[in-house]
Amino acid sequence: MLKINIITLLILYSHLYLSAQNKFENTPYWEENFCNKERIDTTYWSYVLGMRGQESEYYTDNIKNIHIKRGKLVIRALNEKKGKALCTSGRIHTQGKVSFLYGKLEIKAKCPTGKGIWPAIWMIPEKWSLPFGEIDIMEYIDCWNSQKYQINVHVETKENGEKVRKMYPKMVNANVNKYHIYTLEWYKDKLIFLLDNKIYYTFHKEEGKPWPFDKPYYLILNVAYGGWGGTCGIDESIFPCEMKVDWIKYYKLKE
Image (cartoon, rainbow, N blue to C red; front, side, top):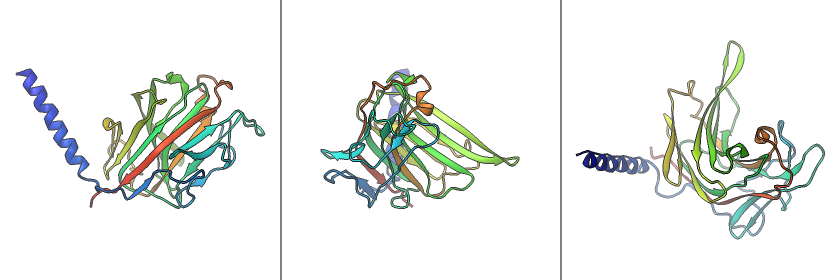
């Protein structure tokens, strides 16, 4: 009887998930297959240049750091010192060019590992305002020994006149050195995160009050070094380090 019940529950879960999938349009509203010869398509993407925060990389638009090869985006961190930076790397985003509000976003990618390296696939709002949200679909630091990555949801508000940022992280077992499909399903009342079409984390509106995920966001892809990425040390012998992105697809949520 127990075996039958388990099978029944699995079938019910499958039907419920497939029903949820039907909430999205069948055809991607936007997709990026990186078909340009060498350079990114600036119709969709912009470069970030220089250093950011307490990190130790210098972002460039040099083809050595960001290029397209055999239909894949390559973001490469190199052992090139520039000013205070210990390496050069790449960071691109879709702000002002492609924005997302609800729907399903899929990214097929593989990421570098090594002490100090910090690859990330993440999203923030097109325009800054409180409450502010950040959606980290995938980020990796070497404290996790190539065996895990982190999903994280940030909610920043003002309490008693002070900015307060709360984080809601979730660890997922996976070797990010291999290609995976990282998925965000964004509903009006929840965020669902999947890896290779399997649900690993659901963040509900009740947890993230005041809810900041009701405005357009843009996508960021980067390979950082140091800062929080160096929590478990840095190693300058790990370079070059490459993030490769095969494709990105965005499906709108049906009205």
